[in-house]
Each structure stands twice: as structure tokens, then as C-alpha cells.
Length: 284
Image: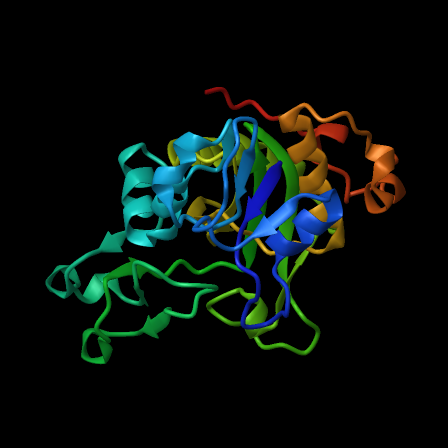
């Protein structure tokens, strides 16, 4: 049996991405391991759910182990880990006493959050709002979400505002930003983001993850976070399904997936990166 452990519902949707991925593949969706009778050949795919960590050892194979998901969900811990390994991240302040005039503006952050709901823009010390930590605000009009699966880049998306939406300092769905595949790619820039994204996922011990990276006004990349449960549209769910089955050694083909089949062709920007000209260079 192949289980997908996720969350059944979200604040925005009746069913989550994890539920829909399980349904596409005829895997068994669960939102708890409490009453599961685990057998010798069972496989567990964790989609952002780190509950019952001790049960990982009972499965034949686990994709995205609980320990790694816990690291990625603790935004302060994961940021400090990435920084320790020379991954470029916005400067972090863990104490308000470390903030000086040159530090501002900053973003107030909590260790655990969902979809940027914790973020508060702070212009000066007199506007300080209590938080777990603060990160330097990086001016940027360009943000990517880069999907990594088993040391390979499988998708590059760009965050863009909906038509008529004013620019926001948090580029998320709630603020009117969309993730798009079909855009004019900057091949030189994106190629440099490939090993950086792969390294982030490796450092957290994840098998797959979506890396959010902003590009500053002076063209420097900064990693914001690594998401262990990225929201996916139908194309994305089929894409992840393709790689999940490949990882598990299940016989399948790109032609089994309607959206992937539709996006074949030399000039299609929606194709997984392996079918285009940007190659992954990461190694464990």
C-alpha cells in the first residue's frame, strides 16, 4: 500500500493538494497515522505532515521523512541551517536589540506560519511588533518558486500579480499573486538558481520541496524558504505524480498524464526542466 499523509482541508480549498495527488494515483490518502496497520512493503509519502514521526521506521520507504519536514516548517531553524552552509538568505535578527537604524525595514516573522500569514512590514524601531525573529526586507520585483525532486529541478515558476493588483511586499496567493509557468525565461539567471535550489532541499534532508527565491534589485538571489507541501494546480499534480512513480519504480509514462502530454514540444515553457535545456547539477 502507498499512503499519502497530508491534510484533508485547507482554509482556501475543500481538499488539499495532497488529497488530490493521492486521488490521481489511486494512492491511499490519510491525515493521521494513529490507526494505520502498517505492513512490510507499505510506502509513506509525507506531504507537509510530520505527525507520528516515530512511525517512519515502520515503513518500507518514506518520501520526505518527518524530521526533515519539521526542519523546513520551522522557518527560523531552517533559515539558520541554510545560512550556516553559505546559502544566501535575507539577514536575520533574533533580538530586537540587534536592530539598528540601518537594519530597517524588516519583516516580523514567527517560527511557524502558513502562506506568509505571520509577516508584518516594519519601517522603524518605533513600529516594532513582537515576533520570534526579524528578517531584512529585500526590495525585489522578481520571485521564483523552484520545484526540486530527487536532486533534479522539475519545474520553475514565477510569481506575478494579477491584473490590477497593487504591488505587495508578500508575494502570495492571498495578496493577489499567481504562480505561472508560461513566461519569458531568463536562462542565465535560472541556470544559476538550479544548484542553489537543489542544495537547499538536500540540506533539509527532503526528497522533494519547493524553494522560494527572490532576486534583489542588484540581481542577487535570496532564499526565503523551502516548502514541503507546495500547492499545485492540475499540471503540477500530474508532474509530481510522474516523479513520485518514477522514484518508487512504478512503470508509467508521460503519456499517462493528459496535461503533461499536452505540454510536449521544444518551445513549451511548461515542460519539466529535464525536457528543456536547463539541467540539474546537484549531487548528494
